[in-house]
Length: 74
Image (cartoon, rainbow, N blue to C red; front, top):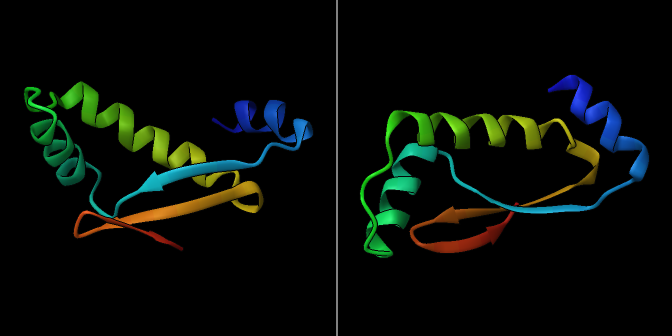
């Protein structure tokens, strides 16, 4: 992950993303709302790793938290 951050950082990106305190719970609810099957362990692990990766772009990151189905800027 650090290598990827070091490659992308010089491009000076601005990153917007939605986040949740509980990735697994949010993913299950989102997929249910879309009429999709529950996520498997591999899918949950992917989204948890993605969240950790995005946190590495701290100074370039705009996070909107999902709480009670609403988006809040953090």
